[in-house]
Structure formats: C-alpha cells, structure tokens
Image 1 (tube, rainbow, N blue to C red):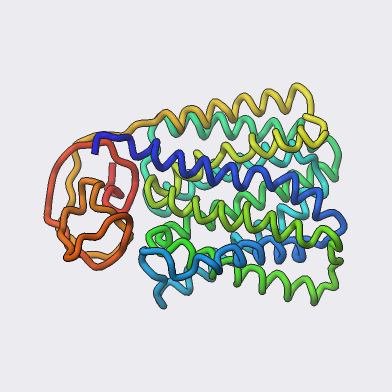
Image 2: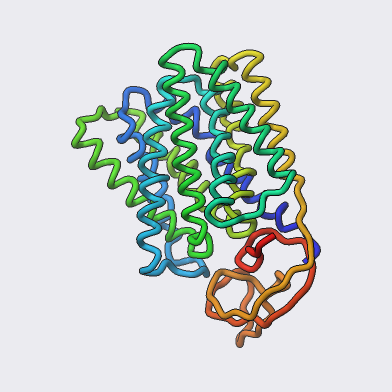
Length: 345
C-alpha cells in the first residue's frame, strides 16, 4: 500500500500514449485521398478486430445492459466525431503541429472530469493545465494557423480532442468493466456508423493504404484504448488524460523522423510548455487520511491492493471480478482515483 498508485497508473497511461502517438503521423500518410468517415471506419474496424481474440479471457466485470447507452454515447464521440475531425484536420495541417495540438485533449479531459465527476484539481494539476493551454495556443497561432487552411485544420484537430475528452469523461464508469468488451463494442459501433455515413456520402477509398489504416487502428485505437481504460481505473479520468499528453510528443517525434518540418522555434516552445505539464503530472503524489464507507459492489480487483482481503476457496490470484463487501475503515496511504478513492477533497 506504500507504493505510489499514480505512478503505477501513469506507467499504463504512458504505454497507451505510445501506442496512440506513433499512429498519428501514420494515419496522415496512409489516409491521403480517403474521406474522413472512411478513415474513421477503418481505424475503429482495426480496434474491434484486435479485440476479438481476447474476448472472454479477461477476469473483469462484464458489460451490462445498463451500460449500453453509455457505450453508444462514447462510441459516437470517440469513434465517430473525434476521428473524423482528426482525419479532416490532419489533411490540412502538419503532422508535427497536429501531434502537439493533441495535448488539448488532456486539458479538456481535466476540466470535464472536474465538472462532471468532481475529480480534485490541485495547484500542481492546475499549473500543468496552464502550461498545456499555453503550448496549444502557440501551435494554433504560430504552428499551423498562418493560413486559413492551416487554421481550419488546427481547429478540426482541437475539435477531435474535445470529442475524445468527452469520451474519456463519460466513459469513466466503463473503466471498471472488461476492457476488451468495451473496446470491441466501441470499435464495432464506431466503425459501422462511420462506414454507413462514408458510403452514403460517396467518400473515396484509400486504396493500398486501407490495411495500413486498419493496422493503425488496431494499435492506436484498440491496444491504446485498452491500456487507457486500465489507467483510468487506477487514477481517474483527469490524471489519465493528463499523463496521456505524452502521446503528442511521441507523434511529433515520429513525424520528424518521417521527414516532416518541425515547425521552427514556435513549435519547439510549445513542445517545451507541454513537456512541463507532463512532468508536473507524472511526478504528482497523493496521500492523506480518508474514510471508506461500508459498501457492497462488483468491480475488477486484486487481493494485494490493501483493500480486498476477503477469502476465496480455492484461492484466486490476479485481477478478477465478483460482488464483494467492504467494512467501514479510516486510514492513510498513497492513492489515486480508483473505485475506492473517488472521495471529495
């Protein structure tokens, strides 16, 4: 119980960021000539396909009928609106600039998590958000908005980040469910909806880039989302979204390695500001006396986390899910914002 769960959740969020970040400039390259809805359909088809072999293997809480409306909402925001806006914007701005502009997702996620779930935002998180806002502003003004087309592209990428932030926050309760089922459901709904719209709109097919986009979707939207949900389970929506801000730096590095222009001093300055925000989040620690009310619930848990000491016959190791009861307790230890630590501050 003495370990820092924010660091543990942060490590998972960073892996999610890597999986997503490397695909951003690749989606721009392989999506050339394809319509935005076609691109979104292929990306989320990849996310759904990579989930199929893992279905039924997890020992986590299954999706329930009461979750369907929430799954539909996050699919609409995160699997249709956001990727369509991103695909459209990527065709009208630089890969490096777009990758760094994606940091706004962290800002929107923190603010929405505070508004919707009352997740705590202290001075440290506030300073990180301020740094990211400043970095995003530099990108919009100087990193891609010098022309009308560049400005529209940057605005579309910003809209995508707002859509994913809404997805992150509305989908927070789904983090306690089987991540494979969530990814499969979201990917299938998003791919189907985008494909229908693409066909009705007569959008162009990307040709040889289709399989590459499916592969990008498998890694950047399937594997990444599964990891993201795992991190969100540990540290909540705001901090997971904030730590996920490492993804733009990874995407910008990949875009630079692919020979794209770095955008000059303004992009470097924006990257520095965003880096400050990421460091502030990753080095955060949280510990204070707090109470746990007596409760009976069902969620994925382990028996080595200091909160689940009930017995099984035969013994169960690793993460699993079943209805269980907790007694009232008051103690102090480092904690994040998992199912047992979403108290008010």
